[in-house]
Amino acid sequence: MIVRLSDGQEPQRMRIRQLLPGLDLGKYPPGPLNSITDVPGVMVHTQETFGPGGINTGVTSIIPRGDWATSACYAGIFRFNGAGELTGAHSLQDAGLLYSPIVLTGTYGVGAAYQGIHQYAAKAEGGEGPLKWLVLPVVGETLDAYLHNCASFAVKPEHIVHGLESVRGGEPVREGNVGGGVGMICHGLKGGTGSSSRRVLGSHTVAALVQANYGVLPDLRIAGVPVGQILAQDAAGHPVRQAMYEDVARAKAHKDGSIIVILATDAPLHPAQLQRVAKRATVGLARVGGQGHTQSGDIFLAFSTANRIPVNQSPTDPRPVTRSIEVLDDSPLNELFEATADVVEEAIYNALCMAETLVGYQGHTVEAMPLDRVRRIMRQYRRA
Image 1 (cartoon, rainbow, N blue to C red):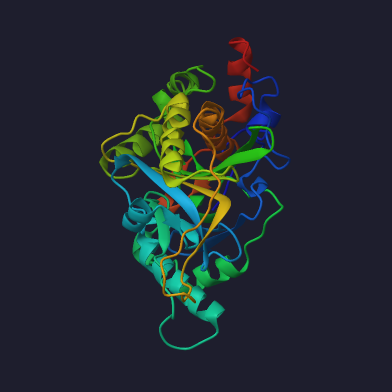
Image 2 (cartoon, rainbow, N blue to C red):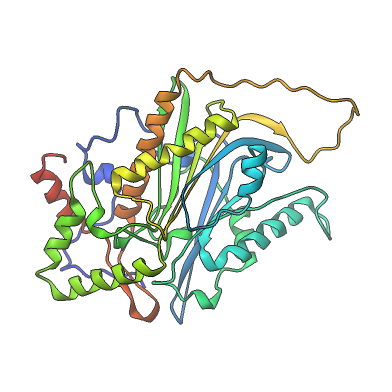
């Protein structure tokens, strides 16, 4: 159940740029939507599942392009800390190719998501029985056990099929308590789904979608300002809020954490370059206060839609085939690396700013980041 625990003066949720118009979020301009859907061809859908017994979960579905099954994208992955899961990672590392939808959900939904991608692919093929081509589903997870009754196994394969059939491009991704981010907690506050984009290298776009479920409150920083420490100090005078923060911190310390970052670009990059791009997500995460804790699964996937690599196609010529591709020289990559850090940082801020207070499983409550208070803090530091 989404509620407001404030005195009624808390403003409506808004993205970080609306909250803090003067905030320095890097020198590269955002795309028109400031979302991962600014990358041409990328389509996303978010859906939520709420129900009695503490069910608060969801699914985020991403399709890199319409003909994903026969036209792979180059891709690269990076594991900052490995206490998490991204299925299909072995193939991604080995071949550097992405030819699957991407689904993000809670930890206990991974099996259903994996099955759902196969069911969606079989339905799209229009036949019964096994697929005639290879799909290695890419499913990322973060654990939503504090706010969601994971033992309900509420995510079903049909949710995945529906999500993948409903993806859309050309519109911003919903943020906060949506999709796989429904039950997620970020720096002791309500986290979830966030996105951001940048225009780089003249005509290209790089963008991020995050499922943020990591960190502790005292580590939270916005543009270097120790916002989390100040909020923790504020709570010292409010026993109910302080008890809530402490309960969340205890739960997260045992098993609950992680962030999944999906990076998309239309810049022509090869797999080794994309792995380097994925590594730069760590910089954006660190700016907000991510430390890569031992219980956290911090896993980043980057893909490029620029080149189309044929897969799952029967060869018409038995002789070896050579293919020509275009890739960027390494010399301009610094711009892309810097923008990657910026979009990850802003996507996490957007997840925090757009998320709402949630009363979840067994009455566990996680408050949304108090936007008015954050605005005042940032003005004190002259960062707003």
